[in-house]
Image (cartoon, rainbow, N blue to C red; front, side, top):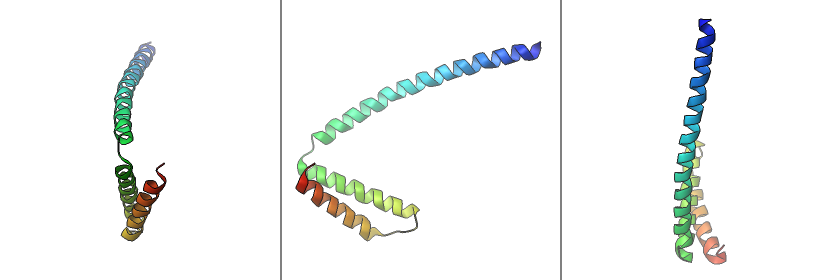
Length: 94
């Protein structure tokens, strides 16, 4: 009898915990959406040159960080990719 009451109590607590978790996730999703739109608006207002430089720097840093974890540290490839991305994004202005 006591075990049945404990099982029901545990089920109710887990349901409440699930509801609290979903409320927390939904609240944080609003914050994430606001942040995404704020960054998106900022990037859309960048000039062609600044956008190309941003893409080049982000891609070069990303490749360099990944190369740190794959034991193939090659700064030359990261810099070459960054420069080529700057040129391509400036030239074609996607």
